[in-house]
Length: 338
Image (cartoon, rainbow, N blue to C red; front, top):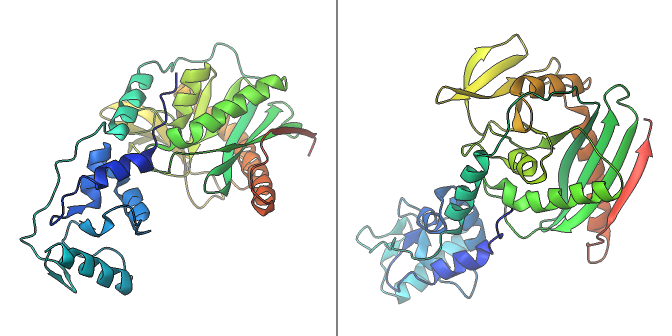
C-alpha cells in the first residue's frame, strides 16, 4: 500500500518556525530535519520566495554566506537579522552567530525512504515464464507545476505501429526531490493503470520513465509501481542515479553494479548522444528488461513507446495549460496504426 503522501511544505514550515530568534540555520540542516539532506535544494527554492509567515531570514548557506544573487533580498535579510541582534556584513553572517540544528518532528522523508527500502524487499527479479506479447510505455508531463498528464501507449510486439493511447490528468502535491520521484508521480501512474483497466487495456510489461532497482534504496518509481500493481515493470531513465560500471556486454550494453550486486545496465544505442539506464522494476529478469528495451528502440535510439507516451502527454499538457483553470480531469483513449 502506498504510504500517506506528506504535506512537505507544511513540514518545512513547522521546522522553520523552530529556529530561535538570534540564531541561524542552513538549507541542509532543514533538509536533515525533513529526513534527508537531498531536499536541501528544494528547501532553498521554497525559502527563496521569502514567505512572510516564516523566518526565512534565519536560513543561510553552510559557508555562512548569504544565499542567492538578489542583492536587494540579501540587504533585507541582513536588516531583518540585525534587528534580531545577528551581526553580518555584505559577505555573510558573522562566524560566532549560534547555529541551530536541533529540529524536532516526524522527519517525513525518512519515513518515505523506509517505505522504499521495505518495498525493495518484495521485488521479484526472476525471468518471465512466457515471452511478453504486448508492451506499454508510460510517461508524465506537466501542464502546470501541480497538474500532471500521464500517458499510456500500448502495442503488440509483433505490430509495434498498432498503438492504443490513453491519457489522464491529475493533481500532484509532492515536490520533485532527487530520489523521491515515486511520491510525486506514483499516485498518478496508479490512477493511469486503473484507467487502463477500465478501458480494457492490458500489457504484459510496462516500460516506465524512471528508475527501477537502480536506485539508492533499490526502489525507484518503476519498482513501486510493479510492487503495488503486481505488473512486470522496467525502469528506463536518462539519469545516472546509482550504480557503477561492472563490465561491458558489448558496444551497446554495460552492466552496472553496487556493492557486488548487478542492478542495471547503461545502454548507448547507435545514433544516440546520451545513454539510457535500464533496470528491473518488478517481475522479470535484468537480461529480459535489457532485451525488451533494446527491441523497443527507435531510429533515434529512444524507447519508442516511452517516446510516444512523452509526446502525447506533452501535447495534452500544452492544451490543458492554455485552458482556464487548467484542470480537466478524466481520461481519453485513441487507437492508431501510425
